[in-house]
Amino acid sequence: MTQRKKDDESVSIEEEVARLDAERAAFEAQRQQVAAEVRRLRDAENPATGVYHAQEIFRLSQEKLRLDTEIEVCRRRAARLLMPDPLHGPLQ
Image (cartoon, rainbow, N blue to C red; front, top):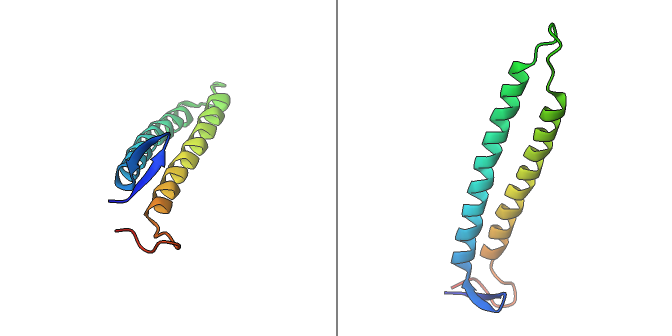
């Protein structure tokens, strides 16, 4: 089992990848909730009666983009941990 140091305690790569996967799954669930709320607000808009939710839709769209970034960061960190070390060969 390969070990790396993190905050003065030893954490296995497998444990860190599992933590990143769980974090990514939580971000994906939040992203789905935000996307559903954006759809709900867009469906609730009614230009004929002057009902608009542009500011809230914009704010939620920005939140969705932030969550997309968090998901990608977690994915790339996990992938980087699983890459073989070019100086010490493949992970054992």
